Image (cartoon, rainbow, N blue to C red; front, side, top):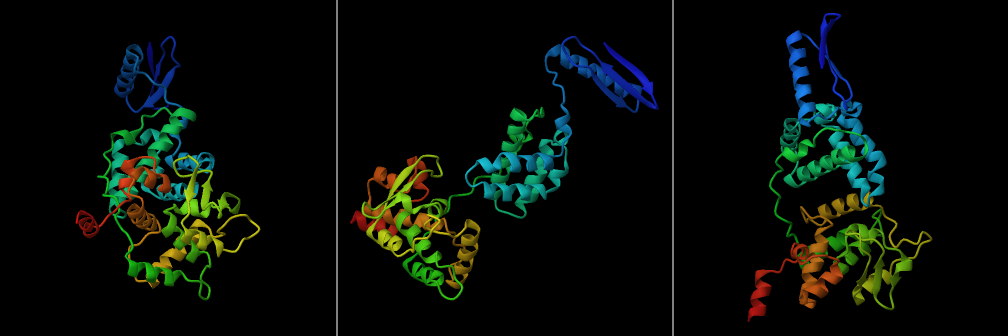
Length: 327
């Protein structure tokens, strides 16, 4: 039964039901207190009641930081996720408490981000935000509904089809050649990426103990999809690795992901190859391998794709090349 009483100029409503914790809230008027009490009683009687926890009053920024500190470090590629979380924390949305985080707030964040970045980045932001809230609901006692489920995501952009031409490849290799203060790891990294179609993280994680030059294989204990695999190495790839000096760390390349990204950005400017990403080297290598490995199962085994649908996103044959095959 609800009780309404006046205290210090405000009206306090208290609702008690057997099997539920007492709910108390203060209002400016008696009518507001009575309306809230009736709503709470109806929710309890109808089974729709959910008690708000104290965690729900926490700011989204606090929840994002907790996720970055406790959950992100357990993931592969966590550095990129932490960077994305820091960007979320700079948004206006981060200042809202979880209980005030409505679909409208999230939609406003989406629209504001779309004015600054591409749709793909916004989709990843919303996906990360949804993951944080879902984890908080499962593990940290948060009781709010996930507002991201009611927010429409931007249309998924078309997959990239950027591949290097022979002339662009020559200019890029010249731009990463170790001259002056340029990092000596860049040239073999780019060449190996074009020879193996390996991902950036896979290349940087390579260790000498997992490379068998005689058998022409490189073993990856952990790949992006979570499955280990062996990468076959062409004679050119073996030649690249044979020229890389062995260091005491056991790693083939001592460069970090951040240093690689910065060096590659400078190199593409020097090479006059605009809008090129390091991952485009994987697209290029896959398309070239398709000419040598027409069997898509064999091609997928080399590139590490788990489905032919994903492989299609990386194989970009030219119409001219297909016309020659048709005769």
